[in-house]
Length: 276
Image 1 (cartoon, one colour):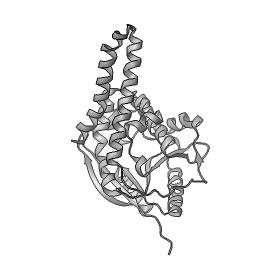
Image 2 (cartoon, rainbow, N blue to C red):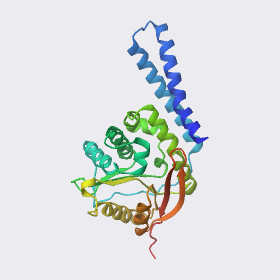
Image 3 (spheres, one colour):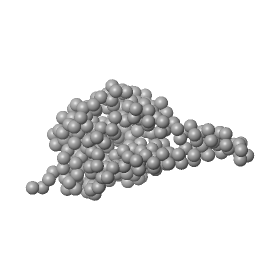
Image 4 (cartoon, rainbow, N blue to C red):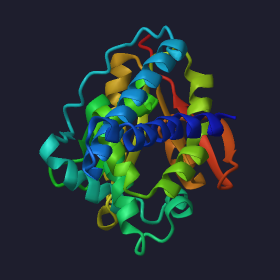
């Protein structure tokens, strides 16, 4: 049901925008196809904004956010470095089982891996923080908090991330949206009305794996959230990562199967350290 709702939220504005652009534009004496495209785009985006505004008011919680703070001992990625961070993250996930199921072989479909990495980084740059393990960019970590962990269509448009996501192709876009929607539902179930840091994505470049850069990113995130007294929530798709996160104090909340792609996922939480 959730998948159908998401598909309708995307298809309805697009369909209305195309229809209006095609049939209404000639009434104003504008025969240019570019005028039709421009009007269709404006109407589609306007409808996206209206729909997201209504749904956000209906679904927003009463979370009182705790300030997350800034990590001082990592390199904070700036706007000019988004491309560099994207390259690292795309490389880090070329052997990831979830990415392989969704996007196929990393070598043949490298543009999809790059597009999704850029999507994640641009979104988190706008609504959270993106860090590199150092100014050499061995590893990348992107985090968000509370309501911003949920990627609404309007937030994706506002951050500019949606254009990267659409570049993977409409079919892949809809498959990803449908396959991953249970992840948001599970997070809402566990973290409703709670303030928390969300580890959106973390990865180390293949040539730097095994050198401790991922551990460095995690340790600094944990130190910051312990100071802010915030729990950390994450999802992972491999058992080896589950064991790794458990060593950092995370505990399994749920083990699920993404039925659309038959992919197991684990949701995990690390409670913040309370000073005695």
